[in-house]
Length: 71
View (cartoon, rainbow, N blue to C red):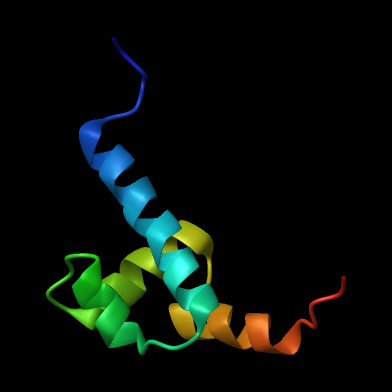
């Protein structure tokens, strides 16, 4: 079955979705998250994350902190 998405793109999507979940927990450092996702370099993880989402993992975490959760 073809999905129109390459294997590499699928893996990247999965990694980035997992990165968001881990960043939302706000307990781990970015370099720990990079390692958990299989990146040997946190600098490369930051570069890939920024290319994918348009902001760095730290900027994402800062926005989470600045945005109050309403129920």
